Image 1 (cartoon, each protein chain N blue to C red):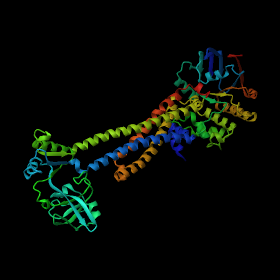
Image 2 (cartoon, rainbow over the protein chains, first blue to last red):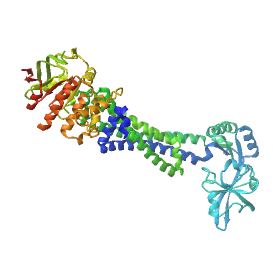
Image 3 (cartoon, chains in turn red, orange):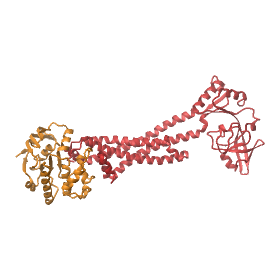
Amino acid sequence: MDVSDGLRRFPSALMAWRNLGRNHVRTGLAALGIVIGVVAIASLGIAGVAIQQQATADLGGLADEVTVSAGQASTEDGVTDDQVAEIESIVTDARVVPQKTNETEISSREGDAYVSVTGVTEASALYDVSSGEAPDRLQSGALITNSTAQELGLELGDPVTYNGQIYRIRGFIAADDGFGPGGGRGELVIPLSGLREQQYYDTVTVVAEDGDAATAIAARLDEHFNTDGRETEEELRIRSFGGAQENINSFMNTLQLALLGIGSISLIVASVAILNVMLMSTIERRGEIGVLRAVGIRRGEVLRMILTEAAFLGVLGGLLGALGSLAVGLVIFGVLTGNPMAAFGWESSRYLLYGFAFAVVTSLLSGVYPAWKAANDRPVEALRG
Amino acid sequence: MSVIELSNVVKRYRSGEEVVEALKGVDFHAERGEMVLVTGPSGSGKSTMLNVIGLLDSPTEGAVRLDGRPVTDFSEDELTEERRSGIGFVFQAFHLLPMLTATENVELPSMWDTSVDRRDRAVDLLDRVGLGDRRTHTPDRLSGGQQQRVAIARALINEPDILLADEPTGNLDQETGRTILEEMTRLKAEENIAIVAVTHDDQMAAYADRVVEIVDGVIQ
């Protein structure tokens, strides 16, 4: 009992299966061509998704944020309490988080590190911690960047000093949050009161739902504070990264299309290879097909038989190609995002499906001409070989 | 009524610049239960005649009748149906499909008819030609004589009215050729079919009910 017995009810499939089994090398090489095409198209698509996801992750939460600082036309060296109150009255649908910033050097037994200091009350709105806590209202204690803490050998509960005041570390900030104000430097986060000698806020961050909301809020603020919208009249400088997110997305879409285009070329090459293989094998079997036609096999049946062969090649190559692409995708996601399992997400795994479908369709298309040619050959001439 | 009848069949075809007249007004018929031998020198037109009888080639002029039905103007698809149901072919070079077992080769002409299962008839025919123990063998594991028996069984699977044989013993030694001819004679009677065979083989005349000689496209 082998596959063929199950195929008896499907004569075209049975004949196609046996025909492919006649020359393993040729079948294998034809399938290999498709495998390479599918791997090319699917893994380039997956790579695009991985790059996009990583780029979005690198932007961090910044896309959802609007950053407000003193504009060029401002007479004050920062954002005033009155302006914060005004912002809060305009932005009712998002959190407004005023901050004061400075820089300092902190030291421990293990060494020194230069860090930026941020004074903020609503620490949880801006920071994710890997251990410890980020309080909703930071009244005492401090948060510090994980890497800086490791560098200095600091642990939860250890003291750090800023401006003569001692703060106990309550949490470690998970990762560099995008292009933070520290610019890759470590960050020390303390209560606003620690920076009370600075009269004004250096930045006010508005944390919105998403990039679109952030863009809308930025526009509203800009209209309120900078009525003529000209750089020289700028009272407050308002920046949002929602637009940056859009730019990245649109760039990524272009990149994706370019990658898929390159992938499709290899699949077209593969389909030409199948066309060649199918054509050669039908020409070789011309006499045999003549016998089939002589003993009463209909033209449509010969056509179906050869198309089924092409479809089998497509399915075989498509399946192997999808498996190969999955392996490549796991590696790509592992390298680019550090999370190989993300390759199974629909965003990227759908390219496996696309690759497979493309393989079957191109194989079928490549089989059409050889099948048509074989089916319509006059039996009396085909019999002569 | 003749199972096959050609009246005044002319077949012309182009060979380069020339027009060759392969059959020049041939009248021919065959009845159930008889074996008719067609002999003649090479190039005499006997293969062309066999192709016309087998509905593989259409005559330029004249008429072809199967069981009294005119099939001269049939389309290729209609001719295919007639070949499938009414005509069996045996070739000099056997022409079995190498990837199919003996049983599958016998079933081949009916393979696409999923409504009828001819497996039992195929096995029965293989038994009758003495290959009951070779059912699952592929052609490369069968001798020439055994392959030709499988080909004869294949020709009979759809219970045809006519069996056409083109040099059926041509690729076999004399001894094996004789057993094949005995097989055909027996099956001719058992299945009540007409056999039309083209041959150069002199020993075949002994098995024929009638011999027709064709020279230069004309029956003598």
